[in-house]
Structure formats: structure tokens, C-alpha cells
Amino acid sequence: MPELPEVETVRRVIEPQIKGLVIKEVIINRPEIVAHPDAELFRESLKNQVIREITRRGKFLTIWLESGDRISLHFRMTGRLLFTPPDFEMETHTHMILRMNQGWELRFVDTRRFGRFWYFKAGEADTATGIESLGKEPFDRDFSAQYLADRLEKRKKPIKECLMDQKVIAGIGNIYSDEILFESRLNPSRPANTLSDRDWETLADHIPEQLTYFIEKNRITPEEYLAGKGTDYRNTPYLRVYGRAGKPCPACGKLLCRRVIGGRGSVYCPNCQK
Image (cartoon, rainbow, N blue to C red):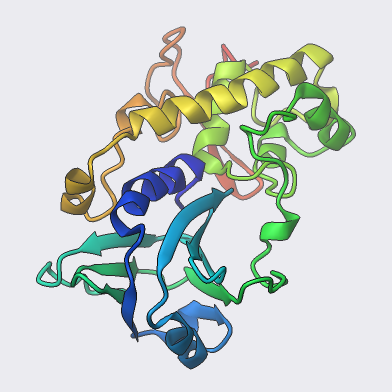
């Protein structure tokens, strides 16, 4: 599933290309990907709307229109957004196409079909996406050790699970929780209620630091992004522990271990993260 750095990368690549364009036609090949309202009303409501900007909240993107209406979307497991010329090869699992006034198309591709879209009129409350229940963004000015401790220090769950709780921190998933905990030298299975004040300070520093690092490593041109069909994320070679079980720890050389925590595979160094 794309996490905060990947979703932010999509926003940075796609927004400059579609800003100011007019949606002339909406083609929906899989009506079930429209969660609100129904697919036909979604399609009709977007005709001739002008795109103003794209914002990100956690793992959600919101396309804001000049009218004040908005489209929210979540990629879930395998969703991708591509901005293509009309003659670009159509991906097999292309479920939605927004055709723009200059001929190019914003296409949503999703192999697993779990991705979802929501459309809201100007001023309409969002009671459908779950965005309103998200916790703080890691880059919020008041994101702090005290904020983390207030919400997590009494929990007996592993700190790995706590970092992925979207109601506490928006945007962190399996990949970057491993990277953050390695950088913080905290074992992913350690109960949150055993962390010290210093541990919370360390996490509060490393969470935004690591996410910023991987956003920057993901930097890619629109041409490169399209050539890779939205899957060529440049930060993969910079992952230090995720997906590297059985390989030497980049810090101490001991073999990295894998453990299932909260149903998710976690990789860590048994020496550095005791």
C-alpha cells in the first residue's frame, strides 16, 4: 500500500500537470470504486469542472475544484494515478478516466480494485472517507513527544502497531514504521507503555525526519513517473531494514530478523533494537 511518502510523490508529480485544466468527460469502468455518491452522479457532477489544486492528508489525496467541490481518493493496496496523453497504452486495470480539455487523461489504475473515490459538493461535510478521524500529520508544528506520549504511553500494544494507528499519526504504514523504529533503535515488538520520555523524544524527532528523507529520495520527473507507470519509486534502494530480513544490518552487520507483529511482517536488528 502506498504510504505517506509515495502519496506525497504522486501529489507533487500530478498536481502541476492538471492544475487549471477542465474535466470534459468522465469514464467509469468499475462503478464500485465510487464510494460516494453513486457513480452516475459522480460522473455528471465533474463535467466542466476546473481543477484548482491537490492536497494530501495522511494516505488520502483530495482534488479541489474551482467551484469548491472536491474529490477525495485513497489508493489502498495497488491504486495508481497516471496523467497520460490520449494515445498512451491503456493499462489492463484502468477503472476511471478523467479526460481533460487539452486531450490528456487522468487515469486511475488498480489491480486489486480496493481503491476508492468520494465526491463532495462545496461545503458538504465529509462523513464517508474517514479523513476527519485521522491523527496529526507528522509535519504539523505541534507534533511532539508529548503528543505521542499522551496518546500512546498507556497502551500495551507493540510500538510498531501504535505507529501505524492512523487515528494517532496519519500516513505511516508497514514500510516506514520499520525504518523509523530502526533509526530510533527501538524494537518493534516493545510495548508502548514501556517507552521512556527520551524514547518519545527520539520518535518525535525521527518520524518527520525519516518521512522527509524518503520523500526527497522519491523525487522524480513527470516523464520518469509516467514511464514507470506510477510504480517506480526511487527511495527503495535507501530502505535500511524493510524487506531485508536475513541480510546484514547496515549499522552493526548482524543479520536482520523478521517477526509478525499485529499481522504485519516487521524487520529489525536484534542487536541494535534490543
